[in-house]
Length: 464
Ligand code: FAD
Image: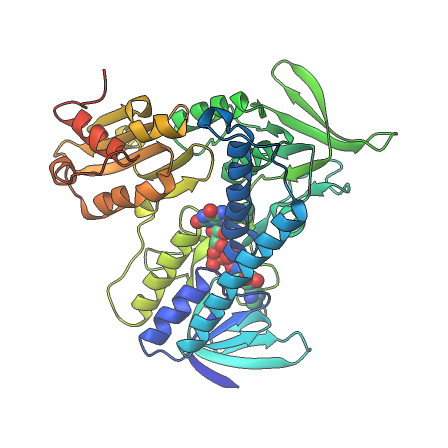
């Protein structure tokens, strides 16, 4: 039996960040991983999708570059090179994570962990050997996996999860995406930009149903303009292979029954927490809709056991949330006062234009009984947006009665980079005046933040 002060199961952005912070605090730490370090984010999520998105965006821009003053034959996508690029980016970042884990003195154990209790964690190595560990504390960071809805024909060849699609990076002329949430809409943007005919089938009344209404409405309009079909209130009835071998999705929508022929179907209907086979010998934790229930310090129902990231019931399933939760858990273990606040987590959609938000929307604040003012700026008046041809973009800032910034919603070029400034404001209760005192450079997308702040006070300069 090997002893560690802390054992962490799962080396995704939750687990590996927690392990490094624990080692920095002098805690003897084991990090157990059954697959690759970096987890979903690095291997099957954030990084490969954004690598594909970067190529897709460049291709779309170059394909319509004549009005920008660029003339050349015709652009073409080389899928072999794109696949190699996805692997190259992933592997270079993975090597970096592994080097950091080792350099900090974390013991990285390869294998699948099962938990019978704090004193009994078994790690089955790929070679069949079993190592027994005991630990004073345990952090469960096992993440999540794509969930498959009970649709007839879901097992047909050509029906893919995001894992499958990122593994193979298939060249597609037609793609049907079941689910218009963040993951579905990111792939819709990628494949539309790569030139495929994309149809998104969303069961709710609009895409991005969990985000601010204006995001879903605006993204639907820009996506349609680019040639992506979006069907809201769509109920997928079956996925079928017709007699001539065509893959086809049968669905009903408000106006009747339809069929969409396609080369592949991406199922993007959510993710299931990865707890299967994790617990043994009667060991149990309280769950909340399948995810492990935690408090603001990431403590579970069993003393000494913490859960972080996608597997924990702690708000949005995002990489930076998992990392922040990992740090809160480790610092709590080290006796520091540290906690996690889901309201401070920015949420991003890497669509075109990008979407990013933090804190409360106007509607959420009103629902919580908070009197608010909002400042909104339409990017049509922003020089950088006009230069780069961004559609239907806006910046919206929500402040409480005392003028403290409590939320922001951006839809514009570089929104996912810009939201950091507003996350600092929300985290620190900065006021309109404090944020407005900064001079933002021209011409930048950032100027829109200054204009939205001015709209909260004396009025935006570049708005009618
Ligand atoms: P994971 O990253 O899932 O890592 C869990 C690890 O635990 C895995 O490596 C797994 O092998 C290991 N494991 C599981 N069970 C065991 C066991 N019993 N023993 C040993 N090891 C085990 N988030 C963003 O913030 N930005 C994005 O742009 C973004 N894009 C995404 C795109 C896609 C297509 C997907 C699917 C997700 C995306 N996400 C994004 C979400 C993000 O990837 C996850 O929120 C994040 O990876 C969760 O981190 P985690 O550490 O909780 O779990």
